[in-house]
Amino acid sequence: MNFEVKDTSLATAGRYKIEWAEAEMPVLRAIRARFAQEQPLRGMRISACLHVTSETAALVRTLQAGGADVVLVASNPLSTQDEVAASLVVHDEIPVFAIKGEDNATYYRHINAALDHHPHITMDDGCDLVSVLHKERPHQTAEVLCGTEETTTGVIRLRAMAKEGALRYPVLAVNDSMTKHYFDNRYGTGQSTIDGILRATNILLAGRTVVVSGYGWCGRGVAMRARGMGAHVIVTEVDPLRALEATMDGFQVMPLREAARKGDVFITVTGNKNVLDREHFEVMKDGAVLCNSGHFNAEINIPALHALGNGEPPRHVRPFVEQYTLRDGRRINLLGDGRLINLAAAEGHPAAVMDMSFANQALGVEYMLRNYRSMSPDVYTIPTPIDQEIARLKLASLGVEIDSLTDEQARYLASWEEGT
Image (spheres, rainbow, N blue to C red):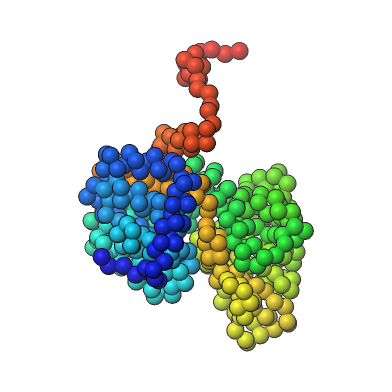
């Protein structure tokens, strides 16, 4: 078996970590039990480019139980848990190419290792795997039956590819399911982002001003959790509907150029580039903390921050904290190299919420294999019945029961004759 991980001697620690996560993932465990019996993925080669965490390990073990031949690589240079990567190689014989802190060249070498697997199915988080496949190895696209995409940034890129006619096979936007939006993006990102900031800095959020750029599902979660920690929260947006929602939710809303003067901690969750830019760095307070919880570190214009420096390289004052001293003496602290702070400095989303996201991935792959022949190369949303089944399974695992419609109520909702 070919693989590249930091240290296989970490495998036992990784197995403990995976077992801890799987205890919090009853929905995925139920799917795995069915997959093991039915083997819906038998004979399928899957190349997965995902954050290599204990929760991801639970997913790839489920795919393997369903009969798939899986290779896993990292979707971000700082998101790998090295002990988990080692455990998958040693205990599950799953080829993994991922090392926390790998450089850019290694990152793309690993992506190409995943493509050397000649996948029938791509499973991506951020669209880097699909992008490299289409740009550098287009001859292989004919081998791919279908794919899935985990995150907002990747879905944006895929839709751009589909619009230009560049996408060569159908891809399921797992990110767009309600059990992903509502829970992973809001509660998962909200909690894990704050967790990453606190682990990196150990600062007190209460009384500080936190600026959240972007009020999508992730931004909603981050703003809610920051307020829960006692912070004064400012939201910046470009979408008038989201800005209005943030206002109605009780947050201050203002342009980022104004918020830049007020903020103590800045968190980007937009999926766009250069959200925090030179004009903002120029007016920030001494000691401002910058971090990103969107997929790519392009959200913070790090080269512009370098250019404003005093000529000295940034100081690594704490793990995952680079302190830039500007020419006027102000210090700006960049967390996790501007990469996903919840994975760079912490452990990512709690397993209980990834249970639903990765249930979407597992059931999404099964759905695509059943239906890809009738699909054109485009981006698709997971069917509502699958979304609802995942929610039903999660409720059952929590011991929560809900009502069901009576026959009379079902007929009423489906009719138009009965009025006031």
